[in-house]
Image (cartoon, rainbow, N blue to C red; front, top):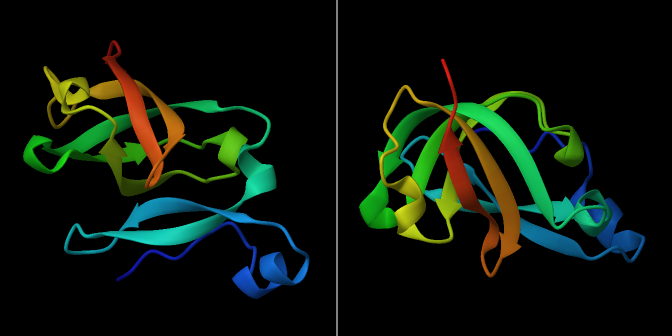
Length: 122
């Protein structure tokens, strides 16, 4: 089952009002990261967004991590499980499946990327 955007904004509605979209990535079943659109207004307030979640899988060779994250109010996202890209593969050092983490997202060249991640007490 492919997860769909929960932002509730139709791309045609965004384009029709002249608001520029920002690329974002989400997971599909085979782990391929696919682009979706996020309205620029949703990320304009903060360049860095913090979130908390539990690591499900790491793919350091691909620079990706699968996280079941809690609600991310700054992005208006409910809890869900998805793959994220990391800006630097070193972010994943010492991180394993089952770790509860706090992580920071920033807009990168290919969409939102994790720029920092730290383990939290379980």
